[in-house]
Length: 260
Ligand SMILES: NC(=O)c1ccc[n+]([C@@H]2O[C@H](COP(=O)([O-])OP(=O)(O)OC[C@H]3O[C@@H](n4cnc5c(N)ncnc54)[C@H](OP(=O)(O)O)[C@@H]3O)[C@@H](O)[C@H]2O)c1
Image (cartoon, rainbow, N blue to C red; front, side, top):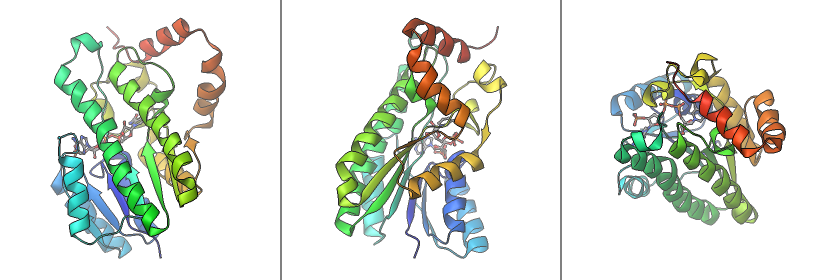
């Protein structure tokens, strides 16, 4: 039997595609995000087309108690999470000092704190259940500092680092932790992050469907870090580490800058 997957950020983009892909394999899903209507629409689609059960738990995971309340609600419903996909996240274009500090903090609360709370809670439960799989959505942004998106890049560096350490700590308890590090993906992300007009966005990106499938399959194999595009993977792992730090900072800063 395919295990139940908890998917955060399931109301759009990559998260929605994770839900569709997991359901196509016969697995039940627990869908969470803030937009309840979008989650209910996805629930109806998946139950109708795939015959699985979808549970909807709307939550603001950037709020102080959002992540722990979600865990309590899942426990109270008697659900067992076999797969955790920490996907919810957002970015924000602009120099750090020009950006709204509250938005920068919310980004850390969602991209980092919520992911840590859910990993802590469900890794513990998975180990007690005899095993489980965690897929954390990091980013290629996590491989270098990111001028003009400084906090976002730093949150993803945290995800990339944290996920690998968790895998090492939990592997002998039957719990694996994979980090998916995509390059640019065409979703609502660019609008939300105010990235339209940057080189990053104008050069086009992967589809959410391909990226979700890539990450999900890597998670099932228990891989440690996976980048969906082999060319980007080569660049991140072999070219970038050889370049001088200042060169990397300028290159990344240019990609995230709006054209005048
Ligand atoms: N698109 C890219 O280029 C790209 C590249 C690398 C990595 N990523 C990562 O991929 C993940 C998914 O992003 P995406 O591209 O699919 O973007 P997206 O379409 O904007 O989806 C983001 C998801 O996160 C949810 N979310 C945002 N704020 C939330 C909050 N406070 N509480 C709960 N849920 C919240 C959103 O739902 P609600 O608004 O309904 O709450 C939505 O479902 C993110 O972690 C992102 O950093 C994206």
